[in-house]
Image (tube, rainbow, N blue to C red; front, side, top):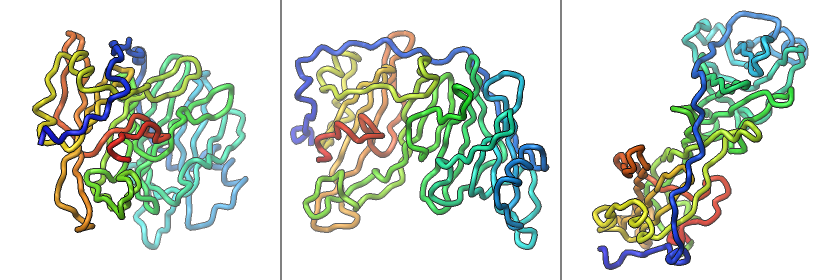
Length: 325
């Protein structure tokens, strides 16, 4: 019940919270796709000559001009294909990929070891290609076969070298939407049972595959996509800032947390006690989260909740919600 709610944010209780000017989204961009070339070409020939490609595998390429200088480069995928148990490759294929190379405009090939490092992945025949200013970004997206998660690596050319355009882990889908990138952080966190008096964050008794969306922005200083900064605020600060009353959504909460991000996104985590799924002797909690966004008219609005919970920093797991500890 509400009287049992745990307010997490105490150290910021007296702090003044201000609306932070949002980092500007990219407004001048081209949202396009690049389709795999299934035919042998100069790029696949370069990779084939430098690497041992067996008869069970073939090479497909995505030809792009990432630095927009009028000279093409290519990403070359090594994909599994055996005529005896696979239908012929078509442009509607999903490729079972094992290795990926980048061949620059000089014909030099680089093995991109941050891709498919946990085992084979499936890659679609079209990939998202975003052009912002003088740079283009290829979103090499795949879903895991050996690994139980999707992955996307965003590549660009910087200082004449192929570069991962984020400092984020490769796991989780990433899409360019309306001027910024959304990273869907994958986790199992719809429900957690407490395990052997461990903190909830350390429990392995979790269930529910979550896809929690985190927005990224393009940092003009180094042409990479980064997470917005975030901090925990109290419910009083959140209500004063937004003019909203959150009592309806936290009425049955065992605990709640408010997170303010630099893109003027307010995330509200809510934990509710429930029946255990794995451990009959321990506590169990279900998690949902709401996100409120500051609109152009000055009002804060939210879509419906999603299942799971947000983290202040989903990469380093710093400033963990106290309730989880």
